Every structure is written in C-alpha cells, then in structure tokens.
Length: 54
Image (cartoon, rainbow, N blue to C red):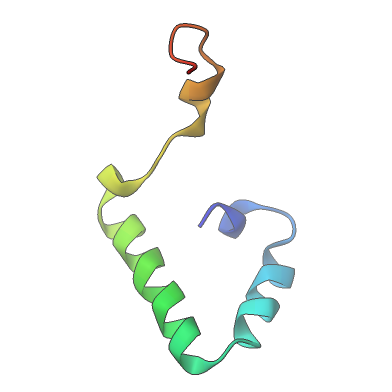
C-alpha cells in the first residue's frame, strides 16, 4: 500500500495489472483490509526510535 504514495506508483500498478486475476483480487482484498482498518497498518518509524529497536 505504501507504493500508492510513491513516485513509482504507475509502474507498480502496471505490474499488478500483468498478474493473473486471482492474484489481483488478493492484492485488492489486502489493500481494502488495510485502508478500512488502520489498526492493520504497521508504522515503520518506530524502528528508528533507539528504545524500541530490537
């Protein structure tokens, strides 16, 4: 989903369109899940915090 905001967005969309319909449907399902439930979003910025890094 992050790619939807990047400058290579069109490239990713074209690559997804080349996948079989079943795979495309799976991707759409996961994108909907993330956009409809923000609790499913993982914020990578917490990895940059020294106290939170593994």
